[in-house]
Length: 403
Image 1 (cartoon, helix red, strand yellow):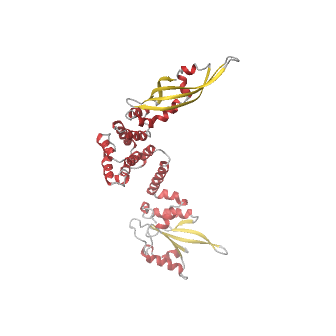
Image 2 (tube, rainbow, N blue to C red):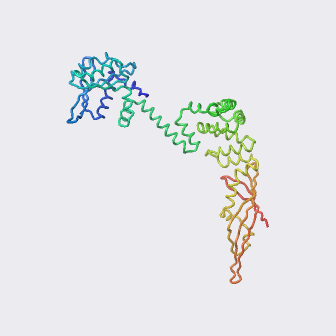
Image 3 (cartoon, helix red, strand yellow):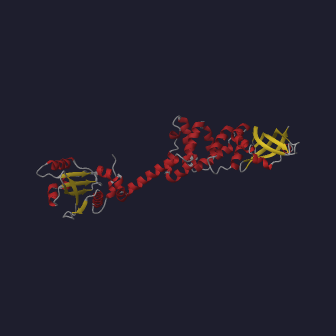
């Protein structure tokens, strides 16, 4: 089991912080605590008094507590370090001896203490709180405040561990761009750079690892350059996605600027499609920027990107409140659109994104003319032409009725 760094207890006079800690532990355990006062060697010992219960009654037992801080030398406590245990115990009218140390007890001293406990004429109860016992106590909930008080470095380390654990819990439930922002504040720079090594990002292919290791230094903290974009193009699709995922989670700003440059300069529609899907995770990737990038794609790719959006827009009845549909208005005195269907959507790129679509209106109508009134139902089809605008919406520029 690992132990605390007891060198944090160093003090002048030596061992005084350890004595203070052990005294507070005794109080926390419900023991009565007193000092023996300083002796000729400038040392002083604690007295713990506890009540030990038997079958008939209870008896107060006084323990002489000897504290030995050897954290600087890391040496175990020897017989010479404690002197005559029997004499000291008898001098202070005690029945027990507790040794508290920041290291361990030497074999000879351990044997001596065990012998004292088993020797009827000089029977003395003995206990040892070594670094392992003290660590176990201080890492338990009842002593958490003592850990914070006497081990500030340990407290800082634990706080960092708790923050890191909390960060990892949060990362599982937020977008990876947010993860990158969090890590920018909470994860050291060198650790984030290390996470981008080729061997870590893509352990499946040595050639791809080499490309990753070449391109990463051209990305971190750098403005986008054609040389870096060219290296991106050399990566296989899965290796590229793995690198981008790590990059967004470590350096989201650098990821965004290079992905955008890649999308703005590439001529492969399928790659642009994937780049747009990734770039949509970033708030700074506005609809205006997206449409300027998407205009580089072929019609099939634009259909994959925007067909659902255009169909959904053109099927909203409220959308047509701003358009005059003469053929429907002349159908009957009173008309009602029951349903709208959209199909055969086609797209073209260029400076922006344009579309055409067939829009089918299922219309019922009636004429209020007393007993001579009549009603009917019909489907009206229009060819709608328009473009996607900023903020992104389907704008119909022209409507042609299809009889």
